[in-house]
Image 1 (cartoon, rainbow, N blue to C red):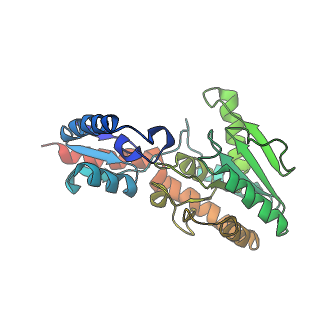
Image 2 (tube, rainbow, N blue to C red; image 1 turned 180 degrees about the vertical axis):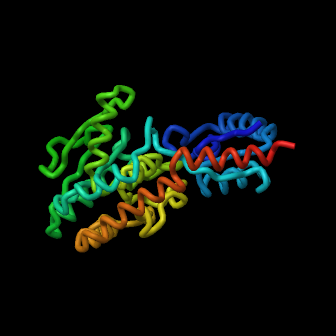
Image 3 (tube, helix red, strand yellow; image 1 turned 90 degrees about the vertical axis):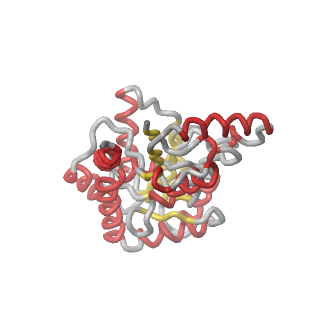
Length: 272
């Protein structure tokens, strides 16, 4: 028996809001049920080093039973290199388009994303913040915020619309407060879009500095985020190199094709 998931449920206790402030009995039963399942597994595949460390700490799972495989993008077909190169080449050097994706505005760091876009504009870099998944609260928004709301990707029209927004964006911005992995990063890299995100949960496993984006400490300020983005727009060919590197990272490490190949190797190790 092999369990393959992004992170164990026990790892989310007091990390995700919906599993915070549980009573003692709920905690005990949750951990007991999960440990009983894990004890039956010959192998546990998780999506990040954070998930691995948490599993070992919570349940004492030995290292030989734990493996890491990042999650791929939720796409029917991966873009070709020529398609991604065209996307990168066609992005204008201004305005800088920041894409924020999240149904939960607060948990995904929407207020920080808004502050970063505001600061970049104040520094003289024409910047737009595209919001997908929700509508920011608080009434009237600045003109540089473009709200696209929730997009139903199960519908072909919605998927095409999301695909267009992703391909046209310069950066995915994800200052999330809690995330097991951040599959939106894989989605972005699949379109040659680098990501700047907070280094929480499994995100440090996904983001490599200067390779496919930047993972910043949870204590990072809007100035820290804007510094990273601004530096690449001061030398736009350098941004284009980062975007190309992000796609290469997706192809070799964050795609489902790469995940399947790695998983098959792990499964074969279990066979006599």
